[in-house]
Length: 119
Image (cartoon, rainbow, N blue to C red; front, side, top):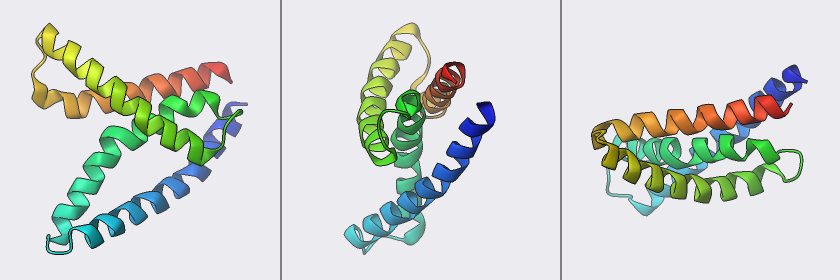
């Protein structure tokens, strides 16, 4: 069962790479006057903050809904959770410069652990 989980994640990693590439191309078309590296950095940061944590959070429901539905719902859920957690971590006293690294790693770990425990 665990091997099946890793096989599904590795298969869907290719889909995530294609979506990232498409997203980068769309942003480059929208911001055609910007340097390609700044567009790439922007798309990578948005993908890191919202898409990857959302994908892993919604992995728990992988048997019920498809990949694209999980990704779209996951991006929305990750945006909400990131905003709420960032607010409360700021109240606790954690400096905001650590939020962009700590929160996605934490959400990815929680999502992966919940999916791993389910299987």
